[in-house]
Length: 168
Image (cartoon, rainbow, N blue to C red; front, side, top):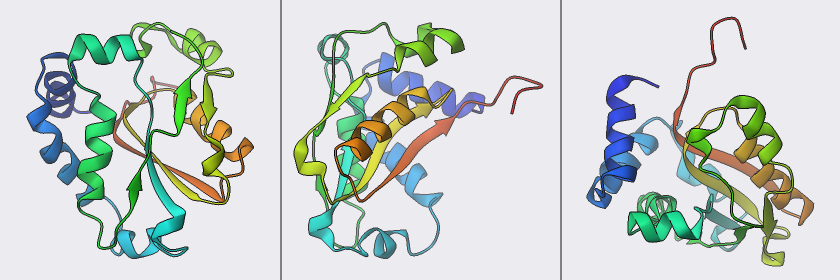
């Protein structure tokens, strides 16, 4: 992740700047392949759902907003067809902030992390998150969706941290 993007995301999440959500959503959408909105709707709007990766409730209270929920709704507003944003994933219990954990801890922490709502069954799910580092959170969220019967799962993130040198 480049320094400018890192700084922007940190301002948004940790310095109480929810007004940056629209800009960040524009940046994410601008990097999607042409025709993304139409392909998203292949099964129809009723079967496509944007699901923000849930933020721990205590962090939402401290931050004053749920950044992934805002991001998912800003992306929804750019879809050519109506699409739903639903809070259909839930954390099983409180966990340490991911940005404070090393890779080994992140991978262990992701096991059985989420519970998916039964309404996910048969739907095309697009998980929305801010930053992917190891991919452990995205894998755990996608696994919960698939195990609950999702038709398919995609993950859209604002940024991807680079792999450490020598690791692919």
